[in-house]
Length: 210
Ligand code: AMP
Image 1 (cartoon, protein in one colour):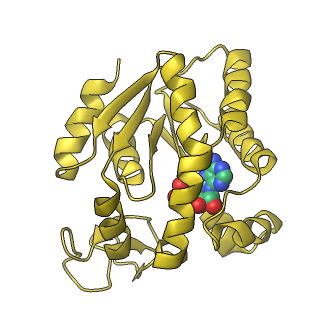
Image 2 (spheres, rainbow, N blue to C red):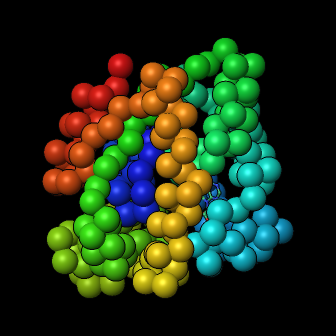
């Protein structure tokens, strides 16, 4: 599992692990954004919360992850990105994994100072098509507004705008920080610095895995 405050780089690192290690990447944020784009009931329900930087209710995201874990072929392992974000979600996950006899190997938390997070989120642009991420200043796309990988359109996530970012930090401190403590108590937490290039951080992620 990979954790981190908004802008810490968990999505970027999760995609690298998926590409280079072949692990199944399960991102609740990506699943919810896909549902929103497709205009499904789930997408419409989630939208109200996401647009305000609030968490989607526990039962909704727990259901999504349960379906994914049941459906996915994860011979080469799986990686949870953006889930669990509350202690009840962590408890539900423990129950699901317990039943399948597949305990978590590690919980990697990527730590980045808050002023750096604010800067990154303001500069973040995401590909509408493949989800690749760029930074306007530090890691721009070669062609402005177009994804280097697939040519898709780059956009700023609505919840990366300043007003919403503040709400997301508050939610992280209130609801998600206790999840870190939950995994620290379980002896699974590995904290790494998320400052540096994406390759440097990727090496830290790999070194932290058992
Ligand atoms: P992310 O892409 O992980 O930053 O998630 C984007 C948004 O999706 C969050 O701000 C929440 O509104 C929602 N979301 C994603 N994962 C969860 C989760 N595990 N629990 C509740 N809401 C979630």
